Image (cartoon, rainbow, N blue to C red; front, side, top):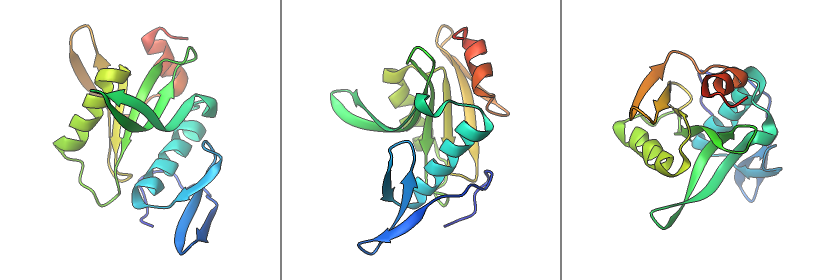
Length: 156
C-alpha cells in the first residue's frame, strides 16, 4: 500500500480467500484492504491517537438516508450527545481530490449537519468548519483536537 501523509500505525492484516484484509478495531472485524480502506484506517487512528477522539464516538461506514436512498459515510465523529461533529470522506491515495469529492461530502452533510468536514486521500487533507447560520465555510490549516472541536461548538 502507498505511504500516506499521516503518522505510521501498526495494523493487523491477513489474506483470506485470496484477498488482503485489515482488522478494523471499531467494527471489530477484518475488512477488505482496498486503497480507500487503507486511508480510512489511518485517518481513524489519527483521529483517535493524535486528536484524542474517543473511539466509541467514531462511526465507520455509517449508514444513513439521503433523498430516500441508503448511503454510507466513511467516518463520522460524534459529540458526547451523539450528534455528528465531523464528517470525513476518504478517497484512495491515487484519487485526486476534485470538486466531486467535496460535493459528495457536502451532500451527505445536508442530512448529517456536522459542523466540520474533512476530505482526504491520505496524501492531501482538506478540513473546513461550517457556519450553518451564515451558510458559509472556512478552510482550516489543521484539524483541532477533539476537545477543541467541542469547545468551538459549545458542545462540551
